[in-house]
Length: 198
Image 1 (cartoon, rainbow, N blue to C red):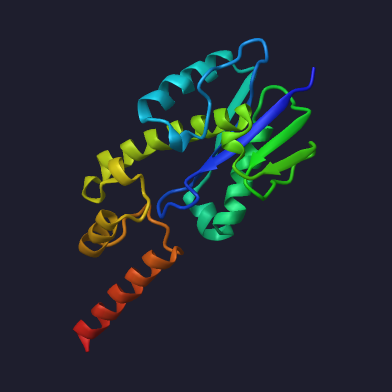
Image 2 (cartoon, helix red, strand yellow):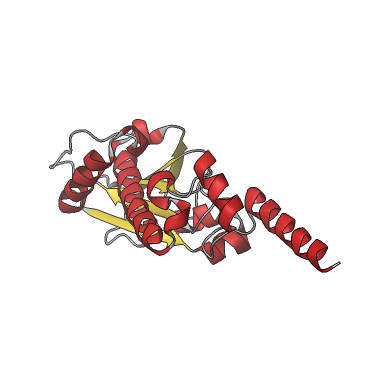
């Protein structure tokens, strides 16, 4: 039996925390209906499907690249690292890996990158859902810790409300300091401090 693994990430475009990636090998004997790009599903539907995926998939793994790794490696390489960890974290070895997008992590399994794969390949859709649900859960926890930023609504992406909160409160410890808009805020803040003491 050919074991196909789907891989996807979430959090790449965010300006907080690390990158989440998931790898999933679905069981052909237990097809799961409703799989598609996680961004096109409601939060409740994603949660329901995530539980079904965890129950019926042959193997699945959710992995991360930390905030520190994003800062040190850059977002692109941290994303590939999270994907690699997810693939290597599976309890069984896949024969083929399908990754959403155009870039592939370095793995010793035949792999193919597929643009919009999260809407085309069920295993990628499943991985997309698992990663999204895991990250959204983390965002709710961050919201409890830093409620002034509204992570529960924008999930760390740079919306108008998020920009306004950043201008008012400055970056939190989980903001990516190497991310251009955050870096600009920090530079501006430093300049203000310098002016105050001149």
